[in-house]
Image 1 (cartoon, helix red, strand yellow):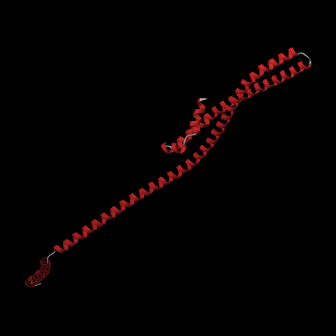
Image 2: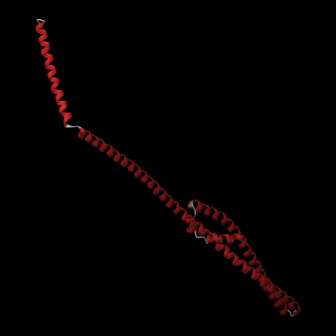
Length: 226
Protein backbone atom coordinates (compact mmCIF):
# COMPACT_ATOMS: atom_id res chain seq x y z
CA UNK A 1 0.00 0.00 0.00
CA UNK A 2 3.04 2.31 -0.40
CA UNK A 3 1.45 3.91 -3.43
CA UNK A 4 -1.46 5.06 -1.29
CA UNK A 5 0.88 6.85 1.07
CA UNK A 6 2.53 8.59 -1.85
CA UNK A 7 -0.82 9.74 -3.20
CA UNK A 8 -1.75 11.17 0.17
CA UNK A 9 1.42 13.27 0.03
CA UNK A 10 0.66 14.42 -3.51
CA UNK A 11 -2.94 15.28 -2.79
CA UNK A 12 -2.09 17.17 0.40
CA UNK A 13 0.66 19.16 -1.33
CA UNK A 14 0.33 22.92 -1.50
CA UNK A 15 0.56 23.42 -5.26
CA UNK A 16 0.70 27.21 -4.99
CA UNK A 17 3.76 27.00 -2.72
CA UNK A 18 5.40 24.49 -5.06
CA UNK A 19 4.80 26.73 -8.06
CA UNK A 20 6.34 29.72 -6.26
CA UNK A 21 9.57 27.77 -5.72
CA UNK A 22 10.04 26.34 -9.23
CA UNK A 23 11.70 28.12 -12.13
CA UNK A 24 9.21 26.92 -14.74
CA UNK A 25 5.71 26.61 -13.21
CA UNK A 26 4.13 25.47 -16.48
CA UNK A 27 6.54 22.54 -16.91
CA UNK A 28 6.17 21.57 -13.26
CA UNK A 29 2.38 21.49 -13.33
CA UNK A 30 2.49 19.53 -16.60
CA UNK A 31 4.80 17.00 -14.97
CA UNK A 32 2.50 16.67 -11.95
CA UNK A 33 -0.42 16.03 -14.27
CA UNK A 34 1.47 13.33 -16.14
CA UNK A 35 2.49 11.68 -12.86
CA UNK A 36 -1.01 11.80 -11.40
CA UNK A 37 -2.69 10.52 -14.55
CA UNK A 38 -0.14 7.72 -14.83
CA UNK A 39 -0.55 6.73 -11.19
CA UNK A 40 -4.33 7.01 -11.33
CA UNK A 41 -4.33 3.83 -13.38
CA UNK A 42 -2.35 2.06 -10.67
CA UNK A 43 -4.73 3.28 -7.96
CA UNK A 44 -7.74 2.09 -9.94
CA UNK A 45 -6.07 -1.29 -10.40
CA UNK A 46 -5.44 -1.64 -6.67
CA UNK A 47 -8.94 -0.37 -5.92
CA UNK A 48 -10.42 -3.01 -8.22
CA UNK A 49 -8.39 -5.72 -6.46
CA UNK A 50 -9.55 -4.58 -3.02
CA UNK A 51 -13.17 -4.36 -4.19
CA UNK A 52 -12.81 -7.92 -5.50
CA UNK A 53 -11.53 -8.98 -2.05
CA UNK A 54 -14.54 -7.26 -0.49
CA UNK A 55 -16.95 -9.11 -2.75
CA UNK A 56 -15.23 -12.44 -2.12
CA UNK A 57 -15.36 -11.86 1.64
CA UNK A 58 -19.06 -10.99 1.35
CA UNK A 59 -19.79 -14.19 -0.60
CA UNK A 60 -18.03 -16.31 2.04
CA UNK A 61 -19.93 -14.56 4.82
CA UNK A 62 -23.25 -15.03 3.02
CA UNK A 63 -22.45 -18.69 2.34
CA UNK A 64 -21.64 -19.19 6.03
CA UNK A 65 -24.92 -17.57 7.02
CA UNK A 66 -26.76 -19.89 4.65
CA UNK A 67 -25.03 -22.96 6.19
CA UNK A 68 -25.86 -21.77 9.69
CA UNK A 69 -29.49 -21.35 8.65
CA UNK A 70 -29.49 -24.84 7.15
CA UNK A 71 -28.01 -26.43 10.28
CA UNK A 72 -30.62 -24.70 12.38
CA UNK A 73 -33.40 -25.90 10.07
CA UNK A 74 -32.11 -29.48 10.06
CA UNK A 75 -31.75 -29.50 13.85
CA UNK A 76 -35.36 -28.43 14.19
CA UNK A 77 -36.50 -31.15 11.81
CA UNK A 78 -34.46 -33.76 13.69
CA UNK A 79 -36.03 -32.67 16.99
CA UNK A 80 -39.47 -32.82 15.41
CA UNK A 81 -38.69 -36.32 14.19
CA UNK A 82 -37.53 -37.36 17.67
CA UNK A 83 -33.92 -37.74 16.59
CA UNK A 84 -32.17 -35.83 19.33
CA UNK A 85 -28.77 -37.30 18.46
CA UNK A 86 -28.94 -36.04 14.91
CA UNK A 87 -30.24 -32.71 16.19
CA UNK A 88 -27.13 -32.45 18.40
CA UNK A 89 -24.88 -33.04 15.37
CA UNK A 90 -26.60 -30.27 13.41
CA UNK A 91 -26.39 -27.90 16.37
CA UNK A 92 -22.69 -28.75 16.83
CA UNK A 93 -22.00 -27.91 13.21
CA UNK A 94 -24.02 -24.73 13.61
CA UNK A 95 -21.79 -23.73 16.54
CA UNK A 96 -18.63 -24.34 14.47
CA UNK A 97 -20.02 -22.27 11.60
CA UNK A 98 -20.99 -19.49 14.01
CA UNK A 99 -17.35 -19.26 15.20
CA UNK A 100 -16.15 -19.26 11.59
CA UNK A 101 -18.65 -16.53 10.84
CA UNK A 102 -17.03 -14.22 13.42
CA UNK A 103 -13.70 -14.44 11.58
CA UNK A 104 -15.40 -14.09 8.19
CA UNK A 105 -17.36 -11.08 9.40
CA UNK A 106 -14.20 -9.43 10.75
CA UNK A 107 -12.36 -10.02 7.47
CA UNK A 108 -15.31 -8.68 5.48
CA UNK A 109 -15.45 -5.49 7.56
CA UNK A 110 -11.73 -4.94 6.98
CA UNK A 111 -12.16 -5.44 3.23
CA UNK A 112 -15.19 -3.17 3.25
CA UNK A 113 -13.24 -0.42 5.03
CA UNK A 114 -10.28 -0.75 2.66
CA UNK A 115 -12.60 -0.71 -0.31
CA UNK A 116 -14.30 2.47 0.91
CA UNK A 117 -10.93 4.15 1.44
CA UNK A 118 -9.72 3.16 -2.01
CA UNK A 119 -12.93 4.40 -3.62
CA UNK A 120 -12.55 7.69 -1.78
CA UNK A 121 -8.87 7.84 -2.73
CA UNK A 122 -9.64 7.27 -6.40
CA UNK A 123 -12.41 9.86 -6.40
CA UNK A 124 -10.17 12.38 -4.64
CA UNK A 125 -7.35 11.77 -7.07
CA UNK A 126 -9.65 12.23 -10.06
CA UNK A 127 -10.94 15.45 -8.52
CA UNK A 128 -7.40 16.72 -7.90
CA UNK A 129 -6.43 15.96 -11.48
CA UNK A 130 -9.38 18.01 -12.74
CA UNK A 131 -8.51 20.82 -10.35
CA UNK A 132 -4.90 20.75 -11.48
CA UNK A 133 -5.99 20.86 -15.11
CA UNK A 134 -7.99 23.97 -14.28
CA UNK A 135 -4.91 25.50 -12.66
CA UNK A 136 -2.88 24.49 -15.71
CA UNK A 137 -5.17 26.42 -18.04
CA UNK A 138 -5.20 29.45 -15.74
CA UNK A 139 -1.43 29.31 -15.33
CA UNK A 140 -0.82 29.18 -19.08
CA UNK A 141 -3.15 32.15 -19.58
CA UNK A 142 -1.28 34.12 -16.91
CA UNK A 143 2.07 33.18 -18.42
CA UNK A 144 0.90 34.42 -21.83
CA UNK A 145 -0.11 37.76 -20.33
CA UNK A 146 3.16 38.00 -18.40
CA UNK A 147 5.26 37.26 -21.50
CA UNK A 148 3.32 39.84 -23.51
CA UNK A 149 3.86 42.47 -20.82
CA UNK A 150 7.53 41.56 -20.66
CA UNK A 151 7.90 42.08 -24.42
CA UNK A 152 6.05 45.38 -24.22
CA UNK A 153 8.28 46.53 -21.38
CA UNK A 154 11.32 45.48 -23.39
CA UNK A 155 10.13 47.53 -26.36
CA UNK A 156 9.48 50.44 -24.03
CA UNK A 157 12.99 50.22 -22.63
CA UNK A 158 14.43 50.14 -26.16
CA UNK A 159 12.42 53.23 -27.02
CA UNK A 160 13.74 54.98 -23.96
CA UNK A 161 17.28 54.08 -25.00
CA UNK A 162 16.79 55.47 -28.51
CA UNK A 163 15.23 58.65 -27.16
CA UNK A 164 18.13 59.06 -24.77
CA UNK A 165 20.60 58.69 -27.67
CA UNK A 166 18.76 61.27 -29.75
CA UNK A 167 18.67 63.68 -26.84
CA UNK A 168 22.38 63.23 -26.29
CA UNK A 169 23.07 63.91 -29.99
CA UNK A 170 20.93 67.04 -29.87
CA UNK A 171 22.81 68.26 -26.81
CA UNK A 172 26.10 67.66 -28.60
CA UNK A 173 24.87 69.56 -31.67
CA UNK A 174 23.84 72.48 -29.48
CA UNK A 175 27.24 72.44 -27.84
CA UNK A 176 29.05 72.47 -31.21
CA UNK A 177 26.87 75.31 -32.47
CA UNK A 178 27.60 77.28 -29.33
CA UNK A 179 31.33 76.71 -29.80
CA UNK A 180 31.08 77.98 -33.39
CA UNK A 181 29.16 81.05 -32.25
CA UNK A 182 31.76 81.76 -29.58
CA UNK A 183 34.58 81.39 -32.12
CA UNK A 184 32.89 83.77 -34.56
CA UNK A 185 32.31 86.26 -31.79
CA UNK A 186 35.93 86.02 -30.69
CA UNK A 187 37.10 86.58 -34.27
CA UNK A 188 35.00 89.71 -34.52
CA UNK A 189 36.32 90.95 -31.22
CA UNK A 190 39.92 90.39 -32.33
CA UNK A 191 39.52 92.72 -35.34
CA UNK A 192 41.05 96.17 -34.28
CA UNK A 193 40.02 99.60 -35.67
CA UNK A 194 43.53 100.04 -37.17
CA UNK A 195 42.94 97.00 -39.32
CA UNK A 196 39.85 98.65 -40.75
CA UNK A 197 41.75 101.88 -41.46
CA UNK A 198 44.56 99.99 -43.19
CA UNK A 199 42.05 98.30 -45.40
CA UNK A 200 40.51 101.64 -46.37
CA UNK A 201 43.92 103.16 -47.02
CA UNK A 202 44.87 100.35 -49.35
CA UNK A 203 41.60 100.87 -51.17
CA UNK A 204 42.18 104.53 -51.87
CA UNK A 205 45.90 104.13 -52.51
CA UNK A 206 45.16 101.59 -55.10
CA UNK A 207 42.88 104.07 -56.86
CA UNK A 208 45.60 106.73 -57.08
CA UNK A 209 48.09 104.24 -58.52
CA UNK A 210 45.63 103.40 -61.28
CA UNK A 211 45.24 107.15 -62.07
CA UNK A 212 49.01 107.65 -62.37
CA UNK A 213 49.25 104.74 -64.78
CA UNK A 214 46.47 106.20 -66.91
CA UNK A 215 48.26 109.61 -67.04
CA UNK A 216 51.52 107.98 -68.00
CA UNK A 217 49.83 105.97 -70.74
CA UNK A 218 48.28 109.17 -72.23
CA UNK A 219 51.64 111.01 -72.25
CA UNK A 220 53.25 108.07 -74.02
CA UNK A 221 50.61 108.06 -76.73
CA UNK A 222 51.00 111.90 -77.26
CA UNK A 223 54.76 111.49 -77.62
CA UNK A 224 54.31 108.84 -80.24
CA UNK A 225 51.85 110.98 -82.14
CA UNK A 226 49.03 108.64 -81.49
